[in-house]
Length: 465
Image (cartoon, rainbow, N blue to C red; front, side, top):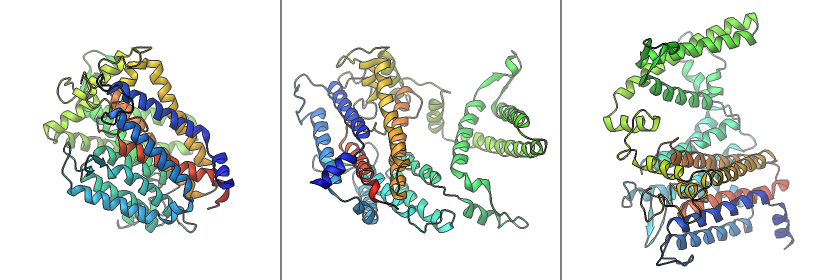
């Protein structure tokens, strides 16, 4: 009894309150979105809102079980849990396709998505492996094995195929970067194969993850600029387009960066800055031309999807139907919204926004509560993410810290991409809003992730490694 009181006393109540608040608002939104006048009972299990109540109850029960289990169990059984989720990912590939993807395991009227639970297994095993006392984050073995833990489920997920979940798994790479993992050992092995070149250390391997993010951003900028025409120095008639525009943009950025470094750096460092900017411009230009060539070689429907996301093309009633209808519903809420159960564009009955109770559940909430209501919901999510970061940084155990950051990155990816889908800032890839969207698999998996974190944090003073 005393042990349970101690655990409850040490639990992070602000994070738990955020969870209850989001779940409650999610239940209210699912009820108003999928409301059927013939079945007004909130606990009618034949309706989606009744089923969501059941999923929330099951999730809370699982959360209670998580707190009854000693925290050391999660580390001891990280490998079996991970292998079991991989087994489910293999089994699901042989199940009948639903909406074009082999993503569901069905048991009568009950179905689960193994990919949602694979995130838990990956987070537990990655935390357990990387937190070993004698772990060398600079060795080839550590780099290969830790990345293999992430890549194996990613390969099985893309075979379903499920692009949304695949993207979410890349969140673990930022966790490794936070723990100081360097790809230098692999980069050095590759570069040292070149005759006459011997490096002892490379900044490429040390900062591989931010560099990868920069490359992705550069690719997006390249596609934006190469498919538009704009006036040089805002002079009418002096216009550039295509790859010429890309090169001009890169050169202009390079000059501005060099001038900035020149103001901040010493005379000796100015030469180094010039060389760095010159190399960056050369590599960026080569990459830009390659991206543009690859883009031009894509199939028409593939080019259309990319152009729709980047805003280079419009097809409101075709390929861009979902995103366009979602933005219309969000905008119709105005400043203060239409009121609870008053959503007209995003209700299930109107069918104006497809999947409005799952992937696009932010639409009915924004339509009902408006700008300020949406701002409050986003503020709750941001507070939750900041709270998880605080929890991660106060851990004495490296294992606890890595797991906390894994949970934080998974929730951040889902939150940012889902909200981005609804307001036109991200492609429609079909991932749920945590603790909010309708669905048993997502509700249970997110709840288990968070309750394990709460359990570990409640015992943080008892664990040193």
